[in-house]
Length: 245
Image (tube, rainbow, N blue to C red; front, side, top):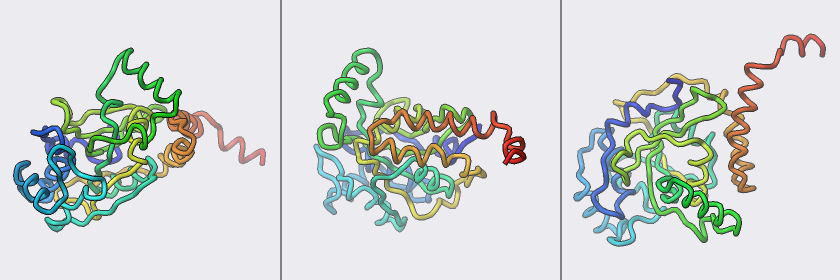
């Protein structure tokens, strides 16, 4: 597979959350496990509650996501208004990445869900203000096997089959935008992780276009960019063009 990141390795470190509101803590415990820190969900909830990072019934605020990692000695950084290219750079370095998403846009499929999503888009309600992110997941990789249709691979503690789930780029971005394209990433890679060999330059078209997509709410531009990059790389005779110039 042509991955950015190491999703196959991280799939083995997935765990389903015990409670409805501890997704951000489970994301952190599964990352800590990769750094050699063994901590249970219950222990994580207690530590986070005692420090004011977790409130039963409402979960963890975006500002506090990552505090458990730092308390265990794993430094993190927060990025807002990010792009897919930013995520790709983090994954390329072997960093572990957590993002906030609107869960319904990932979990609810079918005609009724599609109609409701259309209504939210049509009336301008698919925003962090009206439909905020309510769930935290780990982004573990980007599958570039088909450059015109990149797949975002995640570990999602909120569903029973959440290990290594994949979504088309536009679907993932639609759910991610509800957190203002926010993510938290570790500053370093775990020593046991696999840092992949991937040419990040091949991803530039998609990443830069998503900046425009975020500003215009036209997320489908990201997929169109993938098709554009694929065309540039494979269907244009650059030698002929350079000769003509």
